[in-house]
Amino acid sequence: MNGKEIYQKVRSKLKEHHELFARAIPLIASENVTSKEVREATLSDFSHRYAEGWPGERVYAGCQYIDDVEFICMDLAKEVFKADFADVRPISGVVANMALYAAFTNPGDVSMSISIPCGGHISTGPLYTSKGAFMGGTAGAVRGLNVKYIPFDRRALVIDTEKAEEAIKEIKPKLLHFGASVFLFPHPVKELAQTAKDLGATVTYDAAHVSGLIACGYFQDPLNEGAEAMSFSTHKTMFGPQHGCVVAKSEQEEFYDKIKRAVFPGLTSNHHLHNVAGLVIALAEIKEFGKDYGAQVIKNAQTLAKALEEEGFTVCGKEKGYTKSHTLLVDISPLQEKAGLGKDIEERLEQADIILNRNLLPWDMFEGRNYLNPGGIRMGTSEVTRLGMKEGEMKQIANFIRRVVIDLEDPKKVAKEVNDFRKEFQTLHYCFGSNEEAYKYIEID
Ligand SMILES: Cc1ncc(COP(=O)(O)O)c(C=O)c1O
Image (cartoon, rainbow, N blue to C red; front, side, top):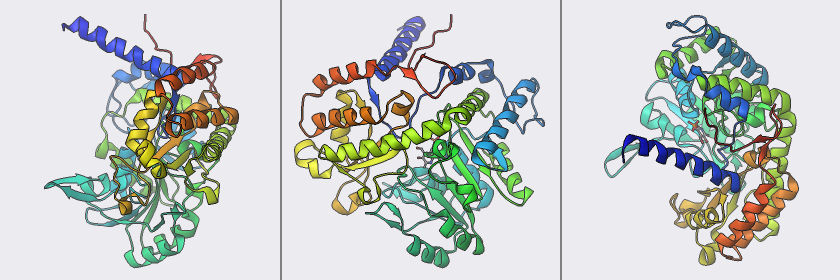
């Protein structure tokens, strides 16, 4: 292929991708879709520029409007998270986590976080070796932290508060880092933060998944429950561009200085200014529409969970109402003989244009399953909510999933009905424009 042909091929792949998402049901818990207003900002000339340093104190020229936008972004982040400090320069959730590790720990220090099988994220995990190679989570492999796990009640899917308090007293971690990737129920920040702080820990909270809900006033309020800093991605329940952020609340200015130094020059040079601009607009959308959006996301997750249970699935967390966030976790191991495990079911649903992901269950390892083909599937309702879906649609989605996974109907046949169903949900809600086509491929003339 010559250069022009490569360009044309990639362009047509991008368009096909947009078409896929315009006809499918998007249920990946870590994803969302941005508004036209956010996308326009991310396509601006900000994407060509550098602005190293803190706004107003840059070591680059040409930054006057960039500074103005970044100050607005910081102010809005402080407002929606009820924080006293915001650094909007981390370029992702992992980088935001790494900034907290760099600011408040030294290599060799002990940190505590949730293990991956219990819903934790790789960026909070320990170092391990595989076939002689060093691998593992950012905390262990990159920062050199000695990661210990926060005791977790694997069946109730919550932190075991009593055992966690004992463990904190015994381990005396330098960093207690709450937060998770399968985050169904709030973490006991209020109950555990003071104990950890009294023993010398910094208490932080990874809100990568739930930052949008927190910004809208739901789930929990970590900074006002005892966490001193919160790291997050801006594109999961929050519908910003892919970026990261740290917000904090502390009595000491030095606490903020440590975060600022860790982010720059520690972890960023160029901090993706177009995404900062997009983030401002997403935060403005949250300020305007967040109450309704957040409430509907959670209502949709709870309705989808209940509907799946009624269709014959085993949905985790039933005793506690399945979920208090956007996420739900389904134990598909009882269907193994008929339909296979997480990987098989994820692939079968993808053929029906239902897009979700396989997920480890907290007890999978004890039953001989691993992350490649685990016993669970995870779903999130942020993106379908943004498309205007409500409780009735959640019941319809649960029915489609049953037909593919339990009735073993031909997924291609179900896909046709899924595509018809999606025709009604092509525009974005909770944004400033009306009738915004959610997955329109934007061509620049
Ligand atoms: C709990 C948690 N932390 C951090 C991250 C990483 O975020 P990012 O992909 O923005 O780097 C994720 C991603 O899913 C996550 O679930």
